[in-house]
Length: 365
Image 1 (cartoon, rainbow, N blue to C red):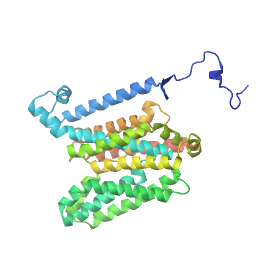
Image 2 (image 1 turned 45 degrees about the vertical axis):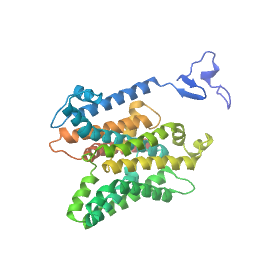
Image 3 (image 1 turned 180 degrees about the horizontal axis):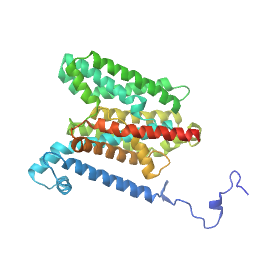
Image 4 (image 1 turned 120 degrees about the horizontal axis):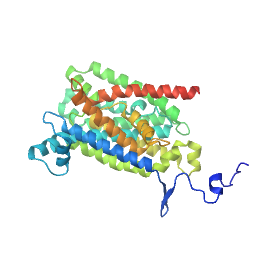
């Protein structure tokens, strides 16, 4: 006999039945215990620390992992502290924070659109930041080089935010549908890519070379002044997203289900998209457009942690691992040092094809 509406489920109707996942209740807050997820997250964080130590230790003055950890804990010689703290740590920290920002941004956009192919670089937000930055480089080259250098992060941030507002407005039709949002984003991305191409063709050759280096996504110019803005954004915006995990999970269930759970749909979508845009724009302003990290990190984290949707903390850690590992490959393994964005694009392209093939197989089934 099947249970009717309002009748107890079979698992709870039997005396002594134990829930599949035990809950932890603290006051009015109730959480589900997921030991495997916690252990996997800790291991992912440990892997990130290990990769960072290896990346910091590689260079013209090599250091072992033990030496790097000794310096980070307050020890080491004067020259070792100078190399680690002043020269190499800001670069690795920037890579970690940029990867975390892109991972969180991708997790938000994929959750809201309910599409694994949605990410800031696919939707055109990264292209908006790039177009604004390239325009400033081209125009600033004729007016004064200092303008292009000082205003580059601000231009990239403004360009990303304005592009996101335009995409959201064009996709609005009594609400924002995920499929329409992606289509509008792809169209805007194509137009902005054409604008970038036109700026590069019409610019001076010296400005073009500077713009091309920035467009490939690089951590070469990272310093402590680059670290702090991204760190503040990740802590504040990323922390707020973690707090709003319930809202994000409700949005994954669809508009009607989210409303039935008491979520203010349009307000929540707008705030979450604003958080994703801010993180992606800050990351692009700090290191240039690093492609495919926001696309791949949430999907990899989802498969590693076995969660129903892209996890926020797992996506941030996975994004950090991807960027720092790509920087390590670009600096040490390849014959010629390359910008980190080239490596992430080379690794992310096949992953995008995998997602497309997987989506087509699901659709055919």
